[in-house]
Image (cartoon, rainbow over all chains, first blue to last red; front, side, top):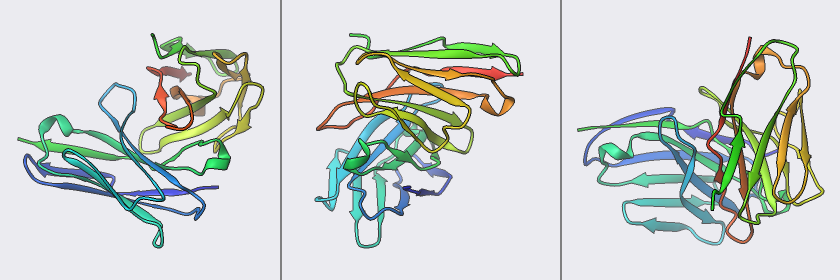
Length: 113
Length: 112
């Protein structure tokens, strides 16, 4: 099955700096790559996703890039704010699995003022 | 519109006891999922149901059973709870073409 590796496991940045979280996947048939944010004690929520026919997608301060050849994708957060502090999960899936997502182990991001 | 509702929110069991986690969604989604979340382990898929009438094993199905009762409801059963099943359990649902997972609030289970 799909194996998703996520790095780093923890990340601390100063407010205003950028944060980058990287993921690799094993199944070359995977074609859907979402990112979820989970605040402490809350449920995970989608922040951005990308499909395999797109190399990059942006939404305000958040961007995701995908390199299908290398089988890796990354989350970029610019101008970080304290409210960006949370655990971020990458995931991957392929259509014929009914889109059952396989998640990475998560990155705990801390943004200090 | 409640989204995904899980019950109970908290439960303490003794080793060997059984229990069922209930999940219901009101978004008319075809697909439903059960994940467990443990510190440092991320979200691991236990079982999923791509559509009403079908269920499939995920990454960590041992010790669990599921029932897709109807399109709205997907339950997770622990027949003989073990301390290793202490975890936070999340139910989720999704629908094509967006495939965005909508999660429930989670159920914290402790097995003593």
